[in-house]
Length: 330
Image (tube, rainbow, N blue to C red; front, side, top):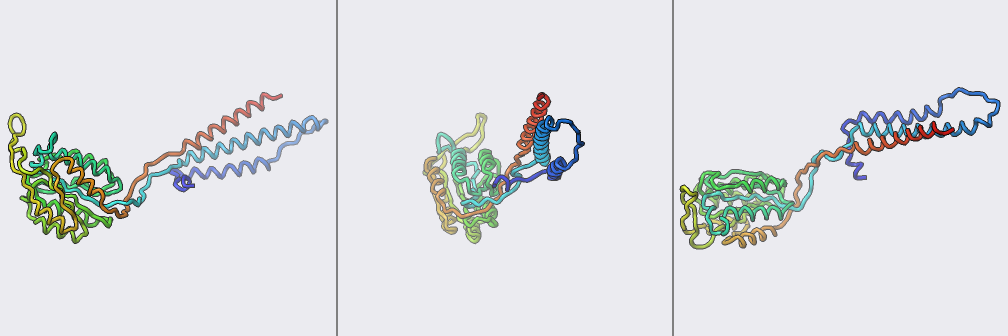
């Protein structure tokens, strides 16, 4: 019954042909036939009954084939519509730091940026029911992907993130404000910003604590992640003939700021000192509460004309076979 309920017709006017079949059957039973007189009625009575039986069988098959053709011409379809799907998820915007310091190589065998990208993609894959967006920031912030359930598009955007795409620096306040603005009108009851950075706020005109207070007024929680080991780390300082030139520089993360930002919104602050701890942090965030949301998903068109058309061809083949058999009888 669900299949019939989902069925629609692209050209429904062809269904008017369905009215021809009952009329043709009625006419075949009422039409007058010329009488032929024989001296011996018993010789023709049996053959007449057989002939009428053959004719009715062939007519029935022909009319059923007509029904199949009319259904095929009407082009039955399933899908091709948007439907609101209720799922247990939350709305998340990831604010991802793209400052040049994310190229520091203290997360061997890769730099911070590549490790953070891989762990973020794993986090996305683990939350198929969540609407997730992506904001990239450095000295400025830019929305890469708005809130979406289309996670393949989101993963592709994460893969394309590169340091140098934005003006260098670390504008944490601008990043929070941009992410919170994406969540401000979101439908989900649970709204989260995952803020991933490896530095100190040194760009932008908006104070991060002020931005966090505004986010909290929208019901947004911030989970901040400071990325980088303690002490010194090889950081790119210039580009030479053979590529980037690295120097050991002290790792500076304003943990007090990130803790204040998270606490203001009811979230938490984490420190990721290696790839394993970053993965564990994402797993902890993955255990956040879930709230119901409704989001549109689109079903593709599925053409179903082949089935009635195949039935029509089969019935016409049977009708022709009966005709050949009838002609071959004495």
